[in-house]
Length: 140
Ligand code: SF4
Ligand code: SF4
Image (cartoon, rainbow, N blue to C red; front, side, top):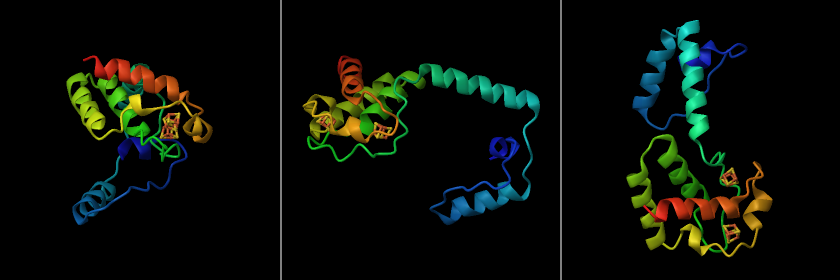
């Protein structure tokens, strides 16, 4: 919240809330909002650069690509793939990928029909990324 309020041109921050506790927390934070120092902004910028450099797929999770006729859970696969590399949580991502295999929603179900790639606003080469994610997460 502080970071958002520190950005030039931002006068209102819309925060999604689904519980009363979140509403109370947001009111508390917003009642005493302060901006980040230039040093803190620089740290945030560097952290963002590091996270971005580790990201494997620039998937925003918008889900425009689903439903897939083969039931491939495209955004979930990419999230697991990214999490493994951004946060180093390879074991956890690999376990979750095994759950997708059991539910028959993993990358290997893809028949390369191309429907998802036509709908992706990020123009991602989804088919190739699904193969990369499978090779990475299934082998661990
Ligand atoms: S290319 Fe693969 S993942 Fe994409 S819609 Fe077709 S079967 Fe599903
Ligand atoms: S449409 Fe593209 S960006 Fe959106 S969830 Fe699917 S793969 Fe990710």
